[in-house]
Image 1: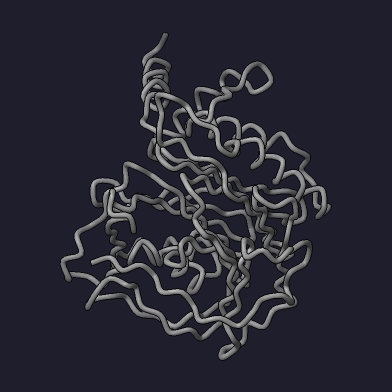
Image 2: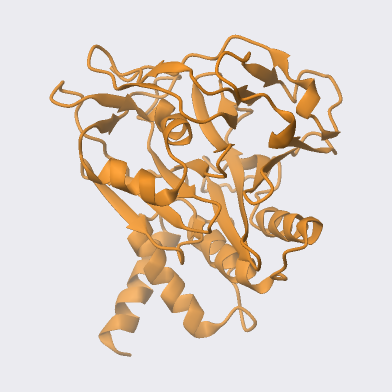
Length: 347
């Protein structure tokens, strides 16, 4: 074997031996006629108490990072999914920009030492959705190094919140943002359609090279490990029908994210932190429709942006899919006025 093959095999071995943490998978589908959809799974050790929110333009926000927090007013309205009422974990804004927050155990953020304005990792996704219409805009803003994303302990106090962010826009452009050794790494390319958890993204790309040489029709790894989910998602997102027909495109993306989901309640004796899939989303960035599917309820729900009021001063809206009310189909008119949640502070 040549040196490149040996290196890739070593990376694959390292990835397969990673300790398991919370897991998620994100994919971007690009079809003809500017058809772009982003899908993801939310895999977590317990129910994250997620809710759906409608946020209008013109909301005054801060980065929840102490006295030197970044401050802004939202330029764009968005529909998001929260976790524990402290964090935006997923969503799409009215320009078709989608953002997805996933766990990355290797994350290490800058110190919140007051030298730069700071943004709590809990507000990272929302900051992007509030301020940018395209991936290029987001990459330019973060590349300037004018502020830092900072983190703190999880609500249960057991560990630091360690997360990386994927962003895609209505043109199919894509970028991955990761903080490694305290420095921001940005991977920006339309080809970066898939992101999972460990290892860091540059090593995921090496794994992708290795499995592309084998070919998905010959063999695909089938475990719940992040590296295996990355390989399956990479193969299937290109293998499903490439179409501009909305219903088929949405169904195709859901079929991929379901394929890489972790069955509810599954456990592995030597991996106690295995996480079941709790919900799945698909953002139709061309038609501006946000789909949400809970594994606990047999109904797909969606929100049509054309039926929402994003004007500044419009009320914040909220749906709690686990409230006991049966939601199904188009729920755009079923948001109830609510006070926005407060982002968890990073001290």
